[in-house]
Image (tube, rainbow, N blue to C red; front, side, top):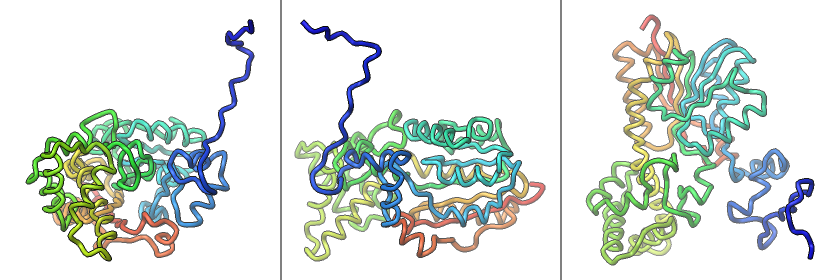
Length: 358
């Protein structure tokens, strides 16, 4: 009888690549080349050139505009309040030229660990970069350790790695669990929140968090589905209920209306279960206290509710003499950037400079 025991010198069995139908991979897991950018750089470059975002990656938005404003110099100390894939962080680290330090914050334990490893391989280890698994509502705690800061960036959008991974449940476009948590190890899922919310509460959530024009119809359809005993556990199940709720819209207009309402509904749920508005209020309130005199802060927002919060906070604090300058108008990405990265289109940037001797 052949010896089937493990031989420590034996090479591990070759793992076959993912198979898929047709000439191009469609699902997230089939895009194995895009998920290994270090190994398949040519494939990743082709996807970006066509205006797409490779699976598992995030293309940082408005990098030039951010760096032009922050005016980072060697020896300074900065804070990236929303680390994500680390693209903005990398650009800021390069400006330090090996002198100074950046603190990077994130609540996502999965992606922040990948980003730390990726940046360390590029030569940015703990001597110049500190990654902390902490919500940016707690920037005051980070400032106690490393502040006050010369510069600060907060990109309030959801990273493409989270949106594209069906296991995270951020997108209505692919089947996955209705999760939507930025930290998948804490809090309740969107499915659980939907179960506990009544029709009136869900309708209010859609209006407040996403300005959803069909909030009443969608909330009613969800309430009716729950009453009939239908479980809403996946992204597709929720999308189907929204499609049913908007079936009264003329067929020619229905497809686009459903897409927009799905995006807004998922946004509203994500904002709610991650307490995004509460987090942003705390962040904006604490922001001036973590900056040095003359310190600079840039914030990217991606929907009107976020932008209103930032605009209001900056204006109030300028009137109070805490900020010496603020962006009077939003700064938007260039047409060229939007053409290369469709996810940049809704981006708005605002900035503020802390007054001297405050």
